[in-house]
Length: 75
Picture 1 (tube, helix red, strand yellow):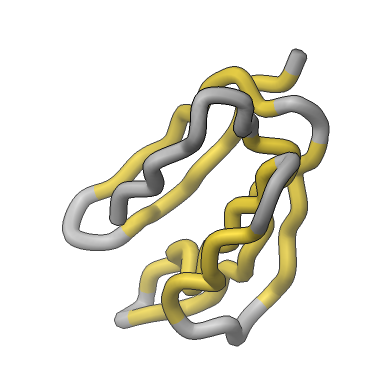
Picture 2 (tube, rainbow, N blue to C red):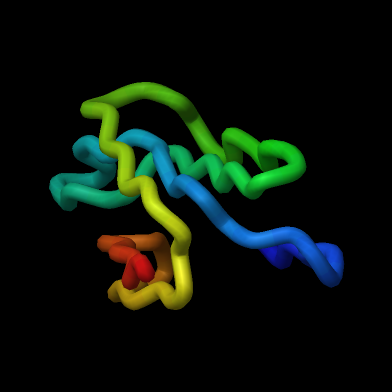
């Protein structure tokens, strides 16, 4: 998945769900909200909800075949 942001657009919130898949806990859905619009949710929106908000300036995470975890740096 790739999201192309406009010149004055910035990420304000990352949310989604996580849950069990093939005996692992993975991110099952992801939604990105900017100051102008929302993208997603991508994936299956079932499981436990999470939200990270604030002006997002970076991402970190872990993945293999699936997205295992995601986190954000905020300003």
